[in-house]
Length: 177
Image 1: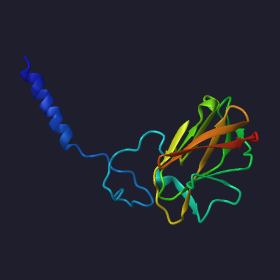
Image 2: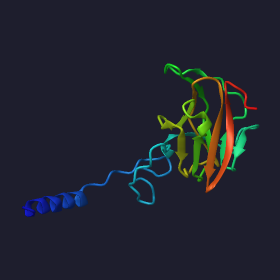
Image 3: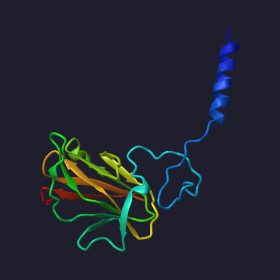
Image 4: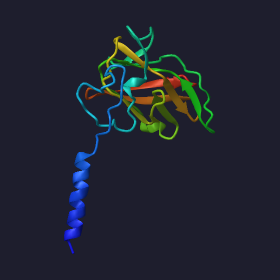
């Protein structure tokens, strides 16, 4: 009999159409009602929440490497410490990005299995992290986090901004050449 199966399918479809939508996350720039676009779509995995901005700056730090005009990476050697996870070291270093600009950072394939990145409070950690076009009171926004490595390493990164791509590297316990 097909009628009962069709009846159940119609009931499930009707229930799905009347269910309450998932509320949008609250961010410091969207207010309690959620983003102004009215979107209730959850960000993809590996995306930092704009609510996790820990501060802002007028400009990147002196001597920082600015990639594609939108991502400020450290140019000094970061000192990794025991991460608390066997076999991994962690170098705490915030990520600074230009407000209103979506960016993506990926650990290059050459360092697969040797390094991960992560920002947010708490935020995603992995080999690719994306930051949406967050708004803020300052031109540059900061997120807590850093680099996790198996051993001191020059971490190769692929930075993507507005369809453009550039390679960069961060010295985590080992100076990049």
